[in-house]
Image (cartoon, rainbow, N blue to C red):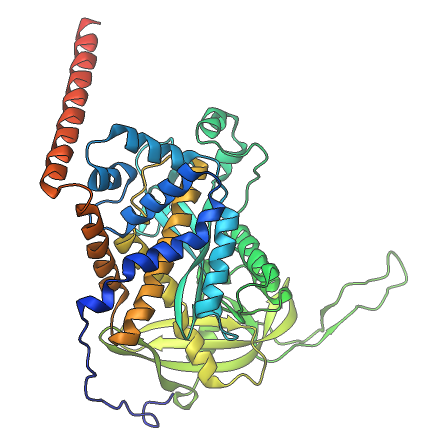
Length: 479
């Protein structure tokens, strides 16, 4: 991992040519892929709408809301728009589809050294009626804004990465405030739903994945929002998984395990039963202070990951420490520092890997969590992850489930294309799939006629809105 010991070797660029014959089977590949999920949509109409929904998510169109997708594929068809909306709001179950997705992921990407990736993803939204929407921190905008917040689990292995689970975060007032009762009913929230924090939702999903015993994994990677939660970290350990989580720089640990004791009984009152630190024990330290005390020889320059413009390099240091639990020493863990020289940015991570874990594996763990960010970026840019215009609780989860199916098919297509032509990106795979599907659509409807249909649809909608606004203004003037 050391740059000096492992110099970058520049090879001659491989043959990267891709031919029409290489991609003409993508449509049939999609049909075969969808057919494995079709039985989980109980009715024929649901299967047809699901297939159409997936097709729309793959297309190169500016926005992939239900109305926009139907207009592109079927023209001026209000019944089809309503039909797809009904499909999104209907009562088909996400869980069986997601569990089957896990089987597909394991068959393609599964690896003993695989990692589950925890992260939140936020979606700016207008209005107050969508399930769980409120003014809260929005990661996409980097500020407090009106948005919905989702919690997601990704999966990464040496073979690739994808999304494997999701939950919509519901702020406490949406669950407990009587004033939200009408809104809860409108969005179809389950009557027995209880408030759960984002970290509780994360723990719930990791537990579900691990207990299902479908996808092989050894690691759980998490950012600071999850890493600061010791209950979540201990839950991950209890599931037989290794956590590697970023923590705040003011997190406390001991460099050496302090001695503890049960205080002697004074002879009166209850006998002590709980351990306490022995008198004179060294206090715990902030990880930022530990990092500042390290010598130059404690750091090693490493390649954290390969970026689109070349290797990402950082200085890394690792040491064994003792974690703090309720003021007492508990597990012995790894404390890993990553210092980005270019940005002058220090990050600290805690890791429950065994003491004999190679340093190179800890360096690898420093860079693997970024793949869920790639899932979010690809999900939003390629398959309409944030383009939904649904308000319902079930509708949000249905959309995310179909987005996960679409994104994983892109992963499969990219793997297949790379066998023929290396260096094919997931963005290029989506572009090719879109063109293949467009050809199938063109065979069913004339493109010029489709343009006219879309124009007529929007003109009619705009006219109706104009009349409605005019009536409202006249009523206000009359009053």
